Length: 255
Length: 207
Image (spheres, each protein chain N blue to C red):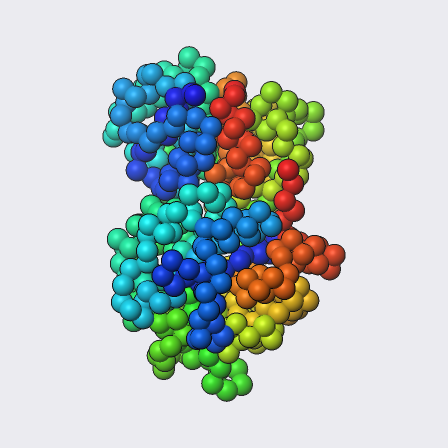
């Protein structure tokens, strides 16, 4: 079995790291640069950096802020928020991102996925899917940081994104997001069942135990989470130690 | 501080690499053949297809100055595609000639049931039996240290003496660091491999 990647997620609004519940009611929780350094030092395998209001306000990611965060980080960074063109992808890569996450624009213009893959390679094109449960085994894809309905089935959207060449999926449960009540394991399973590309499970982490559970039952390739780190409930190191003790392979940070 | 050229030959993202090298050297990104002549070391980065990499060097007239500096014995570090093109031949989209600095080939990562390809993850590097990392770019790196890979092709050096480190993923053991004299190639990305990667870059600048 290969390592499960442990990925702190920084939701950005303006110059701050923020966090809400169900992606609403945002609170300012810190400085992106300081938190990125802190979580990297704790043994994070990657970081997700997401401007969660850029799309809603139809503006670009703040590339200068991303650069100021990326300058001292020597692990992979996935950046997203408001990405609408190949030129936006290029700017994010130049600002220090290794992969770029696309959601709102791609759901209405999936060809952007293919264009970006042709130019930059599948390894750096991540599709971010925000899913809200509508009934048993059925989820609707949302956009604009969990605010706008699309009428599109989230699992079908994952299939189409893969067919367009996406290299990875960040799969967020809007229902679980920010609640610290555990992952929507059924949602994760519904996508990992068929996805030939890595799936990052996001939304609902409440404890190292809840992370172990989604890994064992949902079979994602990586886990992203925010609240439990920002509020100091646990650390990346504690989570990795717990997973290691439960025979889930994670990267050991030697040196 | 050593003057190090990062060759921009049109294949991939070198911003992280530049900022990592700048921590320990006077590193700059260039595509000018003349710049090769005055530097203390050369870094060959790159992501993408083997043929595109060789073509990128050729159209910029970088092949001759690069090979000339390699034969002088200055430190060279190839990363990912930059490591692959150090070998004789590649087989991505048909057969193409490499720099042939290190005899061997570059072949597709064998597909297995239990591994997603491309290999995109942290994986451990170990020393092949009888190989010491002393006085190399891996000096001081613990055996089994994990580094970050993004690739779907692997390096197969012809002569086992050129294998400095190997990695096993999805049941396949492949060469993760190749070395011949002061020419090094890392299949992984040291600039993305946290403290371990920074240590490797620092070591390279002491070679």
